[in-house]
Length: 267
Ligand SMILES: C[S@@+](CC[C@H](N)C(=O)[O-])C[C@H]1O[C@@H](n2cnc3c(N)ncnc32)[C@H](O)[C@@H]1O
Image (cartoon, rainbow, N blue to C red; front, top):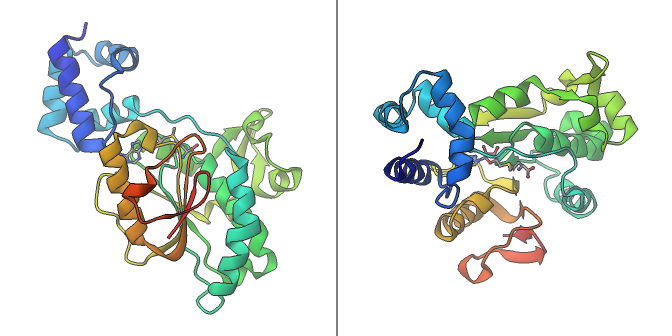
């Protein structure tokens, strides 16, 4: 049983450290953590939180955030963004970056990898034979260690890659059992997975051209969201694009972004 004071303690810890607002999510917290507590021999939530708060880099702290994040994602999710990328953003970028040939894309809540791998396939397809001359690698970050480990293995059920065109399935995946497949080395080397907390200072030396930050800010409160959006704005090159989830919105009066179309913004 989770006491009210323990619930508040977890909510405050997660909000302060990760921006995620769980104040209405008591059932989610107990649903995801009760078993963890029993399995690991804790008598109550206070014991767990004492460990977590004493050492934020401990395995307990890592397990807590792994368990409390929602990681749902899939290949080709919100396909209109990939279409827009291919038709508008990439042709523009190819022209404007013809001298440096360095296109910097960040996938900021990459979860189990379906989104950054989809981006990498779009990029490979678009640059095609010229790809060798370009650096189009995608930086993919998330706060959950568990999903990042999954993502870098690149192992999926065959039914998960169903939404992809057949040519991509053949080129970028190899079958490893009758129902599983693995991302090819050719595609894996285009995606760099790193742990990064969106509440921290953005870790870039150079400005970015494209940021995908989809279906993560729904977990943040308005103030946290606007602060993050403004930090992303500062990190983009002029003309750079930010994509958010299609069901998300941002208060345009509070950012300098230009609105391009629903869920697409430009500096
Ligand atoms: C629902 S998934 C979205 C996945 C993908 N972007 C998509 O749209 O399909 C949300 C992801 O955001 C991550 N996340 C939540 N809070 C975060 C934070 N403070 N910093 C970095 N990642 C965070 C979670 O771990 C989770 O994998």
